[in-house]
Length: 299
Image 1 (tube, rainbow, N blue to C red):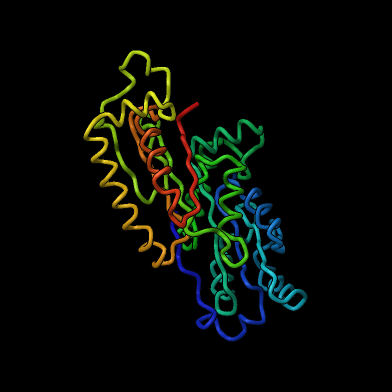
Image 2: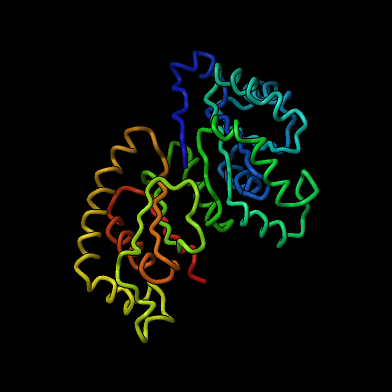
C-alpha cells in the first residue's frame, strides 16, 4: 500500500484548527470495497456521505466544520459521479489548503473484481462487457490513484478483514498498537498479489507437496512446518528475513507509513509459504505492530 504523509497542521494553515480533524475521501474501483470502508469509519463516528457531487464537497466540509467542530468527515465518491474526473483534482487541491485531507483508494485485481460482480449479479457502473468496463475504469482513475495518500489492495481481504484494517487505520488518535502489518502467503502459479511492499520467493526450499503424508496437508499443519524447518536453508532464510523486517519496521514507521504489506510465495501457496508466514507472524507478535495473517491460496 502506498501512502503520502498528510499535511501537518502547521502547513495546512490556521484555518485547519477550526475545521474537521480529518477529511477522508474514500474512492477506488467499483467492487473493491468502498461501501465497507465507509461503514467502518462511520462506526468510528465519522460524518459520512456517499456519492456526493464533487462540486459540493467544499461546501459540505465547510458547513460540517461549523456545525460539528472537530468531527471527522468521510466522503465516498466513484466513477458514477459525472463530475468526478474533471473536478476532483481541483477540489482536493483547494481542500488541502485548509484541512487535513486524505485520499483512500481501494483497488483489487481484475479477476477478483470480475468474480465479485458475478457473485453479486450486479452490473458494472460503466455497463457493457465486464472486463472492458474494469479496464476503462482503472485507466480513468489512474491519476487519482497516484495522488492517493493510501492505496489498499483488497484482493486477498474479506469484507471483515478490510473493515478491521480500515478501523485500525482511522481509530481516533491513531489508536492502533503501531504500524499495521499484513503477512500474506500465496502461490506464484495463481499470480502474485498487487501492492506488496516486501515480497519473498521461497520456491528454492524443499517442497512438501512431493512427500507422502504431507501433500494433502497445508503449511499451518505442524507436520508440514516441521518438514519445512528441518532444512538448514529454511532456518538461515528465516534468520535473515526476520533481521531485515525488524530493521525496516521502525524506519518505515519513522518515514510516516502506517501500513506494511509483506508477501511470501511458493509454487502453489499451500505448503512452504504458509509455514514461513506462520513462523514470521509468531516471531513478530511481540513487536509494537497490528499484525494480520492471510493465507490467500489455502481453500
